[in-house]
Length: 585
Image (tube, rainbow, N blue to C red; front, side):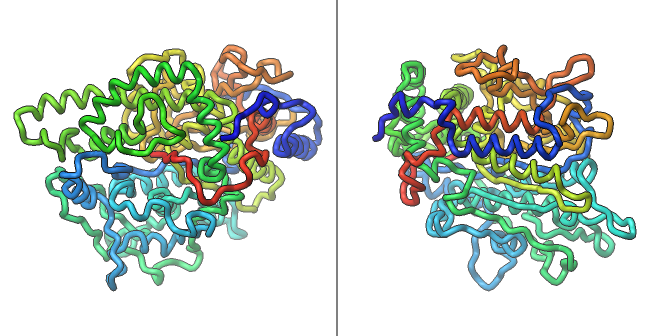
């Protein structure tokens, strides 16, 4: 293992990385386009936190929808029974003549996946695990619902072209939609369902029939003992290619070449990421707190023997288990109304109720410790920069292009389908205040969501201005969670300095307050910044709010890049054959 020396950690102001230089060039380019060489930070009306202005660019990062557990963790005795249960919750993959019953082929007809050869030789990473890790019917419906919500928002508040006769164009004529995914069947299928909700047809055809690209058949609500009874969707709900109008073009889902992919740093540069994570794990504080969790880990492993037998990423940690897999047991069963003690020796015995209560008492501590572990990971500037800087830079480049686009040009609408750990890294990197300012380390309570994941986005409007319910880093992204970065053109008269556009960051229908790693005086970068020394974006004072500008975002990226050695070749290039063992939920 390569050891990170002090010289490799240090970043001299005279030796900025190539990507940092590129970022500085981007700032310069933007300022020139605005006919100014300075960037003035100011405040705008607080209504811009919600819906004010015209949205001219959209970049959405979403977690996949509801899925089966990633791994089977129970006794081998019950593998067949639990597998049969999860088979009843996922769309069947049927390869026969009845094309209509293959949900994946039906989705891919309209949103074809394009997996680059460098990604597992062009095959899904998880295809051989069926049913474990697969998207459920409920997950498909979740993602379709999220797509519909975002369609409502951008039809109402987004950029619109106009035809010569004054008729409004279709969504695809207003927006240049691009879709990217990690190389998992569940993430590809999730973004396909999102796109179905976003651009599928929803106009009534005939008297009652609704026409849309396809319909997954609805989430199952049966009790788990109905395992094995598959629910097939009605072929009549499928839209055939002949039903689509001429302007309904498909959107390709791209799993890009590892050399240019911005979504999965762990697969792209496994050795570098392995070294970074091992550095975090070796810290005294991590070792101490994770050791304290070994008692809970051992108790879990007695009930879920698959935890103790699973290979450990990064050489293992003191607690000795994969906490993402442990958390799966509770999240997946709760989502489907399955008792935590189901498919075990305790089911149906006199001890069942007592065991159920014991397992229930472990659920929150397990998720809390998982959140703590990733908080420690993402407190490492190099690690969070390696994950977040590439997609942030990709966004910024496109945002700057938007500022010089003509009125009738399509605007970028980019969807990234990824995992819980991806969303967490982006939120830490952008400085989501409830994550970076939390000081309640060592506690066990988790922040519980209120209502549906996207319930605060009503008919396209953001109903609450900020994440008031979020008060702790002890939080984990729900299935279908989505971060939307919106490039908003300020209304005439609301511009300040050289700023005509601001960036609004939304998580699950609520605007985020941000505390990124920028100093309050705009003069420099503090190495270890307490939240009180940082600029705050999104807070309201006397009806005004400081909003993130393009130059602010560029500086955030510059800070990330100066913290990172991700742009160097210390990893020996992109590794196509090794994985470090991180698998997001």
